[in-house]
Image 1 (cartoon, rainbow, N blue to C red):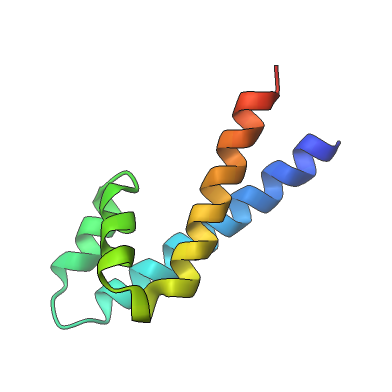
Image 2 (image 1 turned 90 degrees about the horizontal axis):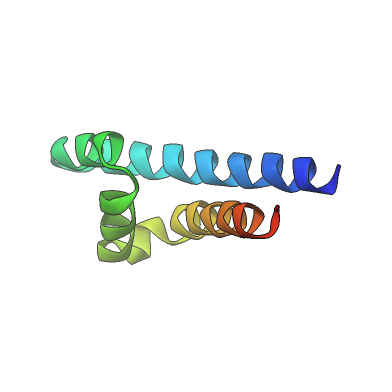
Length: 78
């Protein structure tokens, strides 16, 4: 039961951060940043978030914390 709750929390954090980062990337001056986040498997998402830390701090932290929780669930659920 605890694992399911943690999994749902992690997925919601991960998706919320990803969508928020994608909205920020598409609203910038070049649409290619949004396409990069949409098509890459989190690689460009983290790169873009770090490059634009002042704009993307909160969504990147949400996205990264969801990702870390998912990794911890995968590692500790035997």
